[in-house]
Image (cartoon, rainbow, N blue to C red; front, side, top):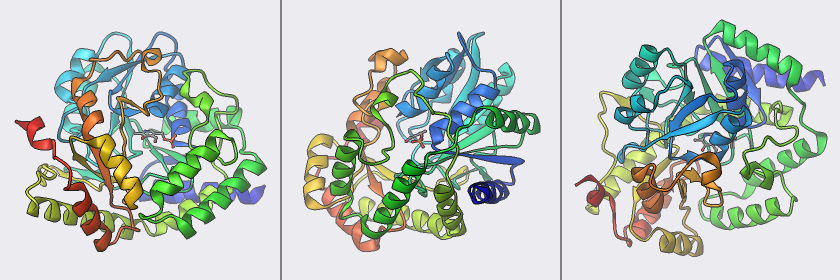
Length: 393
Ligand SMILES: Cc1ncc(COP(=O)(O)O)c(C=O)c1O
């Protein structure tokens, strides 16, 4: 058992050092990390938490678990982050936190977010699940707000199978999280940890861009049958907290995290280089490409989003052709199975998000993507009709 804690503690230490943070706390999943932050901030019944209406429902669930209400802000069509011009209007006397989600690797407009948050004295929580190492005005995302959280699930900047982390520079908050963990955190079970270790081994051996679509189909089927440790069980598509939700990171995840963190600079450099190659090849085909101010942001993409008109058709064709094409987000509170009204989302609340959900597919940039894969992916995606130009005009 001592080993369990030493691997977890070592990962936490290395992680906090990477971000020069006061403290880091590792959890079973990213959503558990967010839950811990909300709990120690005292967010509860009747409170409101603001976040973009272009997210994963697993980000929204912890807000419901503590009894608070999610308030959704529409996104900007170029960065997919919440539109800060719409943010202030959403603040009420009940607002207890703002979640700044850095989507696909693009940092939020942190000057605007922090200025609004300070004016109203509301803590900012950064969702860095899709952005590891991105910078805004030279400062790494995750170091602006009161706390930040990360996910290490399969699709994330690096993976430990499942996993989550909180970082904070606020010593009071760190003390409170430590206390909460001491009182309430449960240990992962032997079977689920062993299963996750086996899944990680399969992932390392067999999952490449050509095999991803097939692997995802098999994995989703096995998850429904309860035969593997899935990212989300069926009960996690409801706003009620499942049993044993507040779970610690296992030794297997922590050891994998330590190995990944050692390779993080290579991972980041690869993502930057690969995204630039997509920029080049797509623009050669006459497609609009990423449009951001390099003096303001230095994004490290988790995936490369493009907009097309025939999203559904492209996803089916890609799976058949062995092209790794991501579909998220498929709706404002991904995935499409989400009963959005149960979370307070009504159709029409975030029009830009709903449009993006219908049009955006995302291309891989992870370390297993070679230049050849990028070329093949660009050849594939440019068979379809781009939708980006229309959006921006
Ligand atoms: C933006 C965002 N935040 C949070 C989460 C939750 O992370 P986890 O799956 O590790 O709980 C996800 C999940 O994929 C996500 O996409």
